[in-house]
Structure formats: structure tokens, C-alpha cells
Amino acid sequence: MGSNIRLTAEDGHQLGAYAAKSTGPALAAVVVVQEIFGVNRHVRSVADDYASQGFWAIAPALFDRVEPNLELDYNPTDASQGMQIANQLGMENALKDVDAASSYAGSWLRGKKVGVVGYCFGGTLAWPSAEMLACGRSNWAEDAHESHPETTGKRHTDRMPREQRGADRSRVREVGARDGDCPQAGQGVGQS
Image (tube, rainbow, N blue to C red):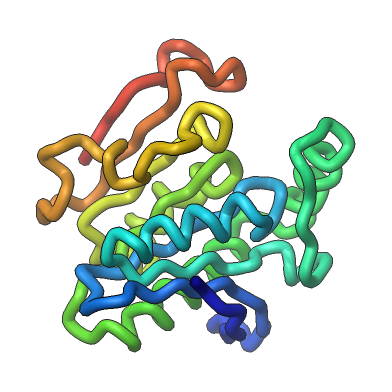
């Protein structure tokens, strides 16, 4: 459904991205921020799912700053490698690349909203992206720590609280109740 494109961040860095366009007029755009496993088959399928629901979705390849075209598998060795690369990348550079994707999507969909959704590592970036970057115009952001196993077969927009779907709110945070890496006190849904 989607295709690989190139983006340029504000500091001139060029990175890859996976873009999936809706078949009809797009409702809005969504930046799909990767897990620590890169823009892999799962992240591309999430972007394709959003596109099938009428969104223009783009997943920037954040790890391109450290190791271009990296796709990792869901195993402990690759998770460790992804965490090391995420640390090398740093929050500031990652946010620049999320902003590049948001700006690109916004240029294609003039007048439409651009949101950001992130999973795992990307969830850490989704919240500040919605606040600080071009995605600050977004109507929602999601910090989803229940990424692939628990959501298989579910439509990603179905996980947004009903009042957020199409609403003009700034941010929504969802942290999975079944995620052992998230402290129980931080689990649930929050918004601002």
C-alpha cells in the first residue's frame, strides 16, 4: 500500500520514511513513530492500517542517523541493539526527524491536521512531539506501550477514546495495562 520516500530534517539530515496514502480524500495525517526495532514490517502495517481508515500516514526512519535502513526483529538481542541506537540517536535528533515527517505530511495535506502516534520508543517521542514540534497542531497524540502482540487485528483508531476521534484536542496518552515495562501508576489514559 505504501512506498518509501526521503525526508530532510531542519539540520539538513536526510532520512528515509514509509508513507501510506489513503485511497480517498485524507481525513488528516498521522506520523507513526517507530518502536526500538526501526521502521519494520509491523510499523509499516500500522501505517497501512491508518491509510485504510482514511489517514495519510508516514513513518520516519529515525535510526537512519545512526544506521540507515535498519530493521530489527522482536527478540532480546535486537531489542538491546535498538536501545543502544536510540541512545546514540538522542531525543533532540529524533524530535527533529519526527518534525520533518510532520512538516512533510502537512505540506501534502494543506489545512488538515497532523497527529502523531508512537509505540514503545516512539511513544516516548509522541508526547513532546505534539507539544513542541509542528505536530503541536495535532488533534491527538498517543503514547502506546501495548504495541504489537495485544493490538494484532485491532484498528488503531479504535483504541483512541471515543471523545478524541475527530475532536479538536491537543494530546492523549495511553499506556497499556498489560505492559510489564510500565509502572502501574502510569498506566491508563490521560489527556491535556
